Length: 419
Ligand code: ATP
Image: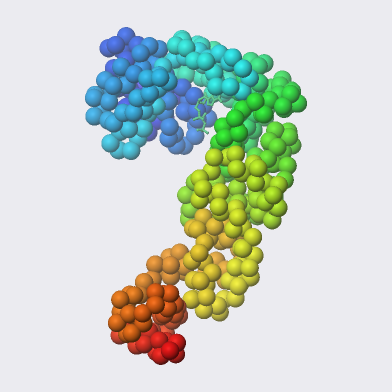
């Protein structure tokens, strides 16, 4: 195969799967294409391509079922959306979708979807750079299908919508435009920029459900530079939530996260860290109405209420000589995400050391005695038992006692003092 074939840039397992999907499609007389972000990334010669989306002109559900058998892969089918996902044994996944056309009955609403051709499917997409396909049927394996000038726009590094109503139909594309602009260092093409600003002036974002707009926004927080993304969104006044957030804290967090070469927390956690930074030192009364509409879990929502306690904890942890038991008592009540926030909010070595020790070791230290042992020593009341156990644990954390015998002896000593 020619080196010029873009698909040869896929890694070998992915390439093999795509090739086989093409062959299977041939047998069923279906046209099949790789589309969207993967094609854009292949054209941009990105090193690693993770997600592959395949569009099928025809019955995708039947086809996906047969592919699952052929590959011995798991499949999840959504006949109502004409989409399917194949989960391969080695962890790779491929999304399949039936080519479709989309019509928006109302700005901001979800589109009305109908089966369509590859041309219609590419036309429904957000930007020309995401509207290029590569056919994978054998006879045309690797042929680039570019109806809307996507390859040219990629060369010229511009982001261009497919048509004038694009941002009004789906205002989440405002966020997507900025995200791609920032990620690739592209510019938003002049007419597209006008349309974007016009859509904001018409208050198009308010036509989208809050959770949908927010989940597009959350994706920005997984990018390399959320600060620039947020600043740009603010500049366009495209998200009312951002009028009150703490950009300075976002900047500090990003600096510290970027400086840390170790990947210490998950993408999900990083997203939450940025949300916490945005809300840090901002009166919650102004933000609550927004946060309540974001469909955060109850646990995630509760984290914001604890932000106020961090100054005090930070103040104490600054002391590098602080006993381990004291650091434990401060950190133990905090959820792990808040602890990470505390870690990256500061770059003070002493604070970070306490946190690293806590997460790596201290929080998991357990006693060798339990409540029954304390009761055997003559302590009856439940609350008292817990107080005794806590005191023994703290002494153990500080390295003053070691082993079951010393734990028991110390528990007895405390009980003596309590009587
Ligand atoms: P990323 O690298 O961030 O995953 P992506 O382009 O793969 O970028 P996805 O959100 O996975 O983004 O979407 C896959 C494809 O679906 C896009 O490339 C685009 O063609 C299309 N798409 C996604 N969201 C929209 C939208 N709101 N409107 C139109 N097309 C969209």
